[in-house]
Image (cartoon, rainbow, N blue to C red; front, side, top):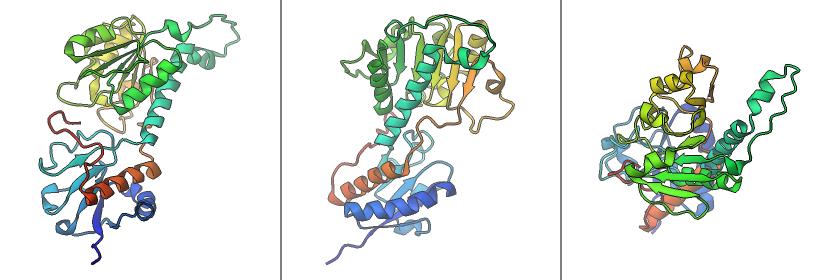
Length: 314
């Protein structure tokens, strides 16, 4: 007897539909997964929900027979509190996200390390023969050693930077100069850093992680890179630290409100670089393979990949 295809409801912004409408059925077929993708399945007939923020509002409780919610984003803070506790929720972790994030972080770390802005933006005919430090002499701290944070820490260490990593729970990585954890390890992780990268999940414990007190701990004039979550930073404290010289430059990819309002102070500040949430865009092809693998696992009764721990929120 043939098994009925799983009904997969695509709950994401309209702009994402054309790419996934082509890729997901093709990848399902390649993986041998029997599934019907639609944006119009009746909620009571849906087996799986593929989700991304910005789409139509969902009452997850209406999907009475759903086996899980499969997020296309690495962060799930927008829905972790609205998905019923007995409905499995996964976050997106894939090679495209890891590679994109590592490239953004490495590119901007090198940009600031080498002083590229000073050369490119001036071009005023003055010969300033000032050689940058070597990477081995510029300490970097990465806050958050999950999939994305660890990928960035390894990339930066591979470029020669002495990298200190910090995470909520202990994480071992031989390429790091130091691996610290827990609230007691955070001040030590920040102390003396010349580049700080924010990649922790956003939880009640990490909101405003970089407040005035913690912004004062790295080396004076340090560079702050935030491709993680906008609310990890106290915006007013950051602006004050920039104006006072404690923070030399902030390159920010994520914000409390997106798109960043045109009148926000970050746009006009001379020591802030804004990028429009592009550090780790989910790539359709690689994400489709992760979704297909989780559908295969669900059908086979195997554990889902990247299942969210409801106690921690990620």
